[in-house]
Amino acid sequence: MNLQIFPNRDELSRAAAEEAALILRETIARQGHARFIAATGASQMAFLAALTSRKDVDWSKTEMFHLDEYIGLPLTHPASFRRYLLERVIRPAGLTRFHLLDSEDDPQKVCRETGAALNTAPVDVAFVGIGENGHLAFNDPPADFETEEPYLVVQLDEACRRQQLGEGWFPRLEDVPARAISMSIRQILKARKILCIVPDARKAKAVGACLAGEISPMAPASALRWHSDVKYFLDTSSAALLKS
Image (cartoon, rainbow, N blue to C red; front, side, top):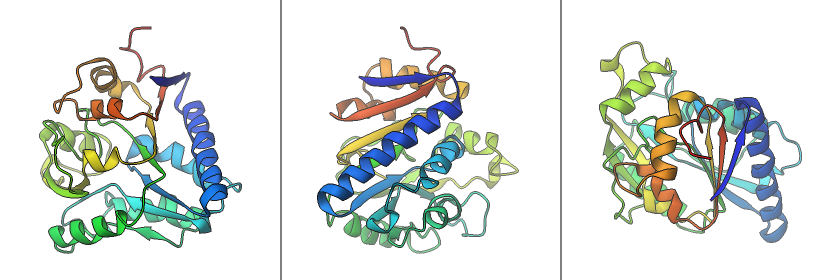
């Protein structure tokens, strides 16, 4: 397992951004363009800020795909992941090619259309995190490890919804949507390379379960261990329950 542990979130984020930029540069040099998946959420902010500020990546030759989004949430809502990606990735990097999940459109139509665009060519690298309940994207436990659909409509469990509340995205638990569109586990695993960026003590239990426990739908991000090229970026807090 390719795992690096850093003293704090800032050092973790800089190192992950360095690796991400290297992958994008090498991919563009080799094939003329690079396709990537970007996760959202509080844990990814420092990493994405470090990555999009880099001037050594030709962002005009990249194409971004959206990992997950709440169903029914307007773009203007502070918790909208479309808004997050626009403000933290698309505009700072100057992306011209990107695919956002329109949560206000018909969810099944969005799954079909974005999935078809995604599957026109391989994804070169996925940037992902691990949720407090072990989720990967919005695939909460027990996650579907079998579906080949690129995107699916999922029900969010209470632990996932409480994480969103705890991160300050919503004022009350009942305001957190109960359904979302998520890239499937098998689709994420089709990326050629995966960087898993997980800071913070609140992720320690999930990191321990997913990296050291049984590979199981009850620990969705444990499925990453099936992939041949994953690099994990942790800090000392998130790695606290891993045995050295």
